[in-house]
Image (cartoon, helix red, strand yellow):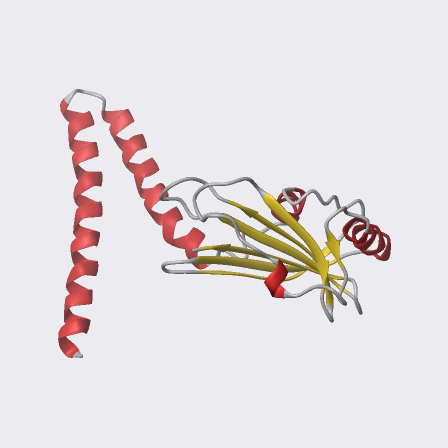
Length: 190
């Protein structure tokens, strides 16, 4: 166990050393070719970029705004006309990325979106829906598929699109609660 901690600490220190050496090389090179002001500006910009990376990962949920939620919902051909509140959002993943958020939407938007799902040509009501009816295409080839269905608690629009060899498919769903004004968005990249 201690060997693992020591190895991880050494790797972390090595990465920090590399980051500092790159910044130092940028500064020294620009000073060497006689651009002292550019050297300082480039080094500061590099440092800010390096600081931005862990901050954006650590505070990813806090940096998620209504504009981001609107864009993701509109990608699944839904439009939110009224104001909404972001109730919850989460992102995680090491080998797979999982992004989910929950919105509190208006009654008008809720009813309109449920109606859009129920009137779509491939809609499956709860009485005929089963997970067996959802047949995924080849992981890497094929066309975009959209399923519209309902289960016991939700009206769901599920979107799946292969993105080519070596790339994770786009697998997203929007669920609208049958009992509240909750809209749940899920995006899974394996």
